[in-house]
Amino acid sequence: MPSDTSGSAARKARSTRRVTWPLRSRQQGTPHPKTLDNLTANLGQVSTVAVQRLSTSLPWFSQLRADERSELGLLAQRGIASFVRWYENPQEPVWVLTEIFKQAPTELTRSITLQNALQVLRIVVDVVEEKVPELAQHNDEVALREAVLRFSREVAFAAADVYAKAAENRGSWDARLESLVVDGILRGDHSDSMRSRVSALGWTDQGDVTVMVGPAPATTGPAGVERIRRAAGRHAAECLVAIQTDRLVLVLGGLRDRMRSLTKLAAVFGEGPVVHGPAVSSVFDVKESADRAQAGLRAAAAWPQAPRPVYSEDLWPERAISGDPLALRSMVEAVWEPLSASSTGLVDTLTTYLCVGHSLEATARELFVHANTVRYRLRRVSDITGWDPLLPRDAFVLHCAVLAGRLNSQP
Image 1 (tube, rainbow, N blue to C red):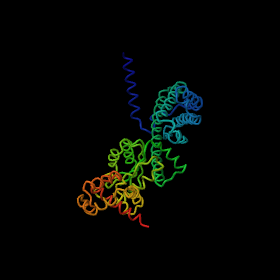
Image 2 (tube, rainbow, N blue to C red; image 1 turned 90 degrees about the horizontal axis):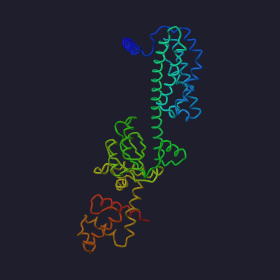
Image 3 (cartoon, rainbow, N blue to C red; image 1 turned 30 degrees about the horizontal axis):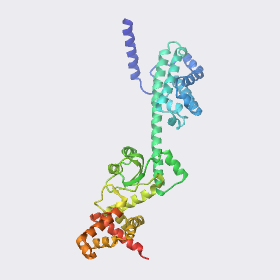
Image 4 (tube, rainbow, N blue to C red; image 1 turned 180 degrees about the vertical axis):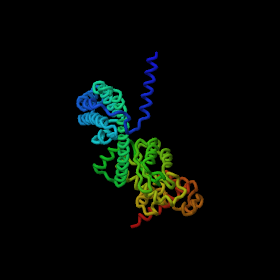
C-alpha cells in the first residue's frame, strides 16, 4: 500500500511538471554526452525499425503507392533526426515544421488522412520509447523519455497545422476552380479541358440542370460560400457556386422537388429579384438556361410584383422590351405560330378580346358569335399556349406575343 501511494504521488508530480513546461524550451539538465553519442550512432537503426513497424502495424500502409510509402518512411526518419538535434540543444526551437514536414509533398495530405499521419507518429514515438533504456546513460533515462513525449506532442501539433493549411489551400483552390468552371460553362465552353475541370469538381450530371441567378448576399467570403453550398446540397444532388462581382450564380443538378427547392434556395441570395432558367439535360448545355436567367434578371425590375424566384420564361415581355432576342423568338414560337396555325379563328378572337377591354360579351358582339363560343375559343388559347387570357398577367403576355408575331410576319 505505501509503495502504491508513493508511485501515485510521483506520477502526479511528473504530470504537474510537464504541464508547467514552456512550449518551446526544456527545463532539464544538459544531456549526458554518452546519451547523445548513442542517439546519433543508433539513428539509422531506430529509423529502420520504425519504418518496418509501419508496414507490419498499419494495414493501410501496404495499400499505398510505392512513392507514398517511401515518403512516409522519410518523414519518420526526419522526425527522429530532428528529435536528436533538438535534444542535443535544449535552447534551440523545435524544428518539426522546418525539418520534418519541409520536404513532404502537398499531395501527401490528399492520399493520407490526418488520422493516418498521427498513427505513423505514434508508432515512431513507440519505437523511440522502446529504445530509451538502451540509449540513455547515467540516470538520463527519465529525462530522455520525457523529452520524447514532449517532442511527440510538438510533432502532433505540427501535423495538425500542416493538414489544416493544406485543407485551407485546397479549399481556396477548389473555389477558384469552381468559379472558372462556372464562367466557362456559362460561355458555352465544351472543350476537353473544361470537361476535365468539371469532372475534377465531382460533377456527374445527375438529372436536369438549372441555373439560378440573383444578387450576391452580404457575406461572400469562403464561409459564406460554404453556407450557400450546404443549403443547396439539401435540395440538389449537385451544385456549383460562383460569386461574380455582385451577382450569385447557382448551377443546380438533380433538384429533388423543383419548385419547392427553388423557392427555398431564393433565401441564400441578397435583396432583389432572383431568376431561374429552364432545365437542361446536361451541365454543358447550361448556357441556354443561363442566358435566359441572366436576361430575366436584367429585366425583372420592370415587373415589381414578380414572384421570388421568378421563371425566366415568365418575363418574356420585359425581356423583349429590354432587347432580348431570345424572348421575342420564344414568344413567336410558343404563342403566335401555334395560334396562327389554328383554323378556328383563335388569333382574331384573342385580338378582339384584348382590344375591347377583356370583355366576353363585347368580344361576342364584335365577332357576331355567342359568348360561350368566345369562352370556348379563349380556353383553347390557354390549352395551346399555357397562358390563360382571363388572367391579367397572362393576357399581357399573350398581347405582347401577338404583337411580336405580327411584326415577325412582316416581309
